[in-house]
Length: 220
Image (cartoon, helix red, strand yellow):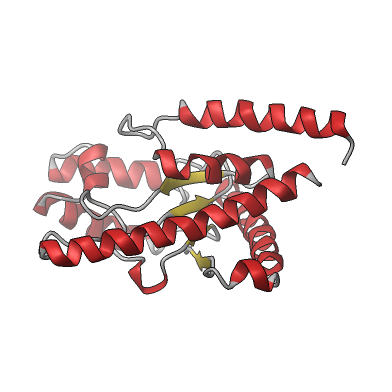
């Protein structure tokens, strides 16, 4: 690899890492430190990300690291007439959109049920169809990268990268296998200690994949 090109790409990596560390989600939380580089490298490879987590045992979340790969600029509404239908149902149940999205109250759950029934008869907008088509394109690219990664026996034997398809055509990549589940407050301390060890192992598997992504970008 040409030294100058390599140096320029390293500058791009450094800039992207800084950018990702400054991200905030809709609740104002930053990207978890142990998943920052995965998010950065995926974005540098042209794979837009929409959510991530380093994995948690003692906090709410899943017990293995994950990243969602999704096209940018998701349309606010999926269906024709959705805004009017949504506003009507929110008014009927006396709640706002954030309460609906949280889905934690009886009113929110009933509103969701009624909204889903109403929207099931509506046609998707062209904007949403284009967005899901882009999701599928990114998903294919992500699948190709993971397939090539897992052909390398000396790397892949450390642990697989799993890719889960979502209903909108986007994908979630993660490690952890059967440990990729939400943690439980009911776990005994001895069980939590075991899960911390397994989480660390899952994070190490993700770190190996991150290094592969880095090398792929540097040598592209």
